[in-house]
Structures are given as structure tokens and as C-alpha cells.
Image (cartoon, rainbow, N blue to C red):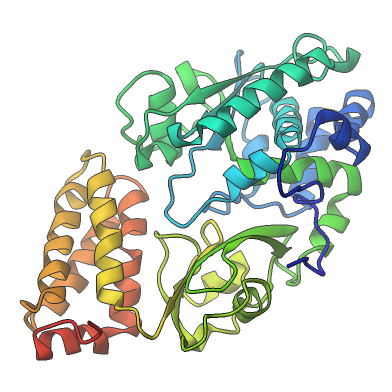
Length: 424
């Protein structure tokens, strides 16, 4: 269904093929790079991105401009700029859709971010299941280089950048920045606790900036149209830009929708995703992928913006809205998610390595009718322990459990009392 909202990232999206370089240029593509090469300094680019309130779209929502500013002027070379296209978060598929829709938008965004950090080497880190996307990027990077947008002395500015595509070995933890850094260097992808931060000592001890696909695609539009224009795209005062929402689960039209930050959850589900099928009623959703807490009916009108969700103890995450209806057992759904996270843990620290299988076992026993009343406080205690893990993996993994216990404890109780799943 066509959207009534401005399509910025999806302006060139076609149903059956990618956008060519010429089509991208006709829509204003590489105009931002040409302008920057003639008139802008790296500090100018950093400040404009900062003024635009562009927050990282990969889940952490860290200010993009601040991350670029964190690379010191006198930092050593070479410097690296990395596009994180790992996208292993269940329910999230926006990066793949963006790459297939308009790869040069991502490439230009990566070049502009590289210019802002004075990076000489660009890397696109992509999950192995996205082989078609990786081949598209490699082909279009070559085309961009032949057109003079990559390589030595880009557009006569004196700035040089090369970009390569690196295929991941295929683990969820590789999407975590410091684990990704280790993976790129050929090490076991365990996370590292900063300081030093990657912008100070990243790949091979050199300054490195990591940005998500969705984030980088916004940068050319910020430069072309200005920070105030970008902020004006959002429906909330704290937002900036549009957001690609991935909608899946019990909806009539699952897919990716580019909508303003701050659009109500109800509108995303009912107007853009076509509502729930006949006979289904909204029960809950995960607002930002598998590592966020369930939103119950009381949040159906909430503004889908980073700050709005933070204020009520939730996270927008990647903007992957996974919808569950009244016939869905949320104990079983949570168990399914914990099975995934227990398998994907890197095993580096005790809370994550031991805690997730422990939680999985309790949930499995509850779902199979073997639960006991004391399991609920045990789940609550263990969930708190996981916040002491080495990185953000465990707190994210346990978020659905926290949401289940906060909003749907009565459903857990029913499993225990009836000694079976009441929804089967």
C-alpha cells in the first residue's frame, strides 16, 4: 500500500529490481558528496549530522554525529569506517531491503561518513545469508569507483577511500560492535569492554567508526536538505527523520514501511500493515526485534520514537514490530526466542553462558505443564542477573522474558495452575 508520508530512503524503491547509478543520480544521488568535496570540511559534516538529531538505527540509538566527532583530529592513520549489515536480529530485515532497493544511497552515506572521520578504508560487514546483497554491493561499489566516487582523490578533493565487502562467519554476536571488530581481525568474536572505544582504538589499534546500513542511508539526505528539514520529517520533537519499520507476525501485509519517527504503533499495524487477520485481536508486540520487551494493549497508541519508548521503560531497537494475536501463547513465543539467544551466546561470560540455558529450562518446563509457582520469582531473579553480563547481548536476550513477567504473568500462572498450555 503506498504511503502518504514522504519516502526518503525508499524514494527509488522498485518492486522487481535495484536502482541503477543513473537513476540514483537523477534523484539527487551523489550531489551531497559533490557538494561536500567542494565546500565542506569534515567538521562541517559532523556538525550537520549532529544538528539533524540522527540517532543510530541499529538499535543503540547513539547520536551519529557524536560518534564521528569522537575521532580525534590528531588520531593516527589509517582510520576505518564500517557499515554494519550483519542484521541478525530476529524480525529485522530493513537493511537487506535497503540494499536491494538503492545500494548507492548506502555507498554514498558510507563515503560521507568516511570523509567526516577522514577514514581511508571502508568495510561493509554483511551476514552470510545475504549473499545476493553482498554481490549487489560489490558490483555497485565497482561502478561507483569507475564513476570517480571511490578510490584516490575523490572528485578532485584530495580525499581517498576504498570500500570492501566482508562476509561474516554467521553468528548473532558479530553484530555487537566490539565483537564485530574482533571478527574482522580474524579473532574469536567475543565482545570487549571499553575504554578504549573503537573510535580511539578500533581495528588493528586504529580509530574505527561503526554505523548501521539504515543510519548511513540517511546521511546524503541530511547533507542535501539540511538538519532542520530532517528533524521536520519526524512527528515528535525529540525525533529526527523517517524510520524503516519491519512489520511481521499476525498482520495482513507484513513488510518494510518507511514512516516518520513518532508514528503511533496503532497506525503502523492497522493502516500500513493492513491490520490483523479476521478473527484475530491484538495481544502484544515486540517493538524493535527479539531483544526488546513485549508491548501490551495499553501501549497501542504509543509514539514509535526512541525517546517516547524510553520514557515508559521500553526500547525502539531496530524498529522491527513483531505482532502477536490473542490466540498466541506468549510463553511459547518467549521460549522460542530464548532458544535462539541461548544458542547464539558467545559463551564469554557466566551470566549469559549459564543464565540463558537456565531461563530456557524454566520456560520449557512451564510450557510443557511441569511448572511450579516458585519458577516465576526464579525467572525474575535470573533476568536481573543477566544485566551483569559482559556486553548488551544478555540484557537484550532477557528483555522478552521481562516483558512476559511484567505484562502477562497471569498467562504464566495459567500454565502452572492448569499444568498445560491453556492456548493449545
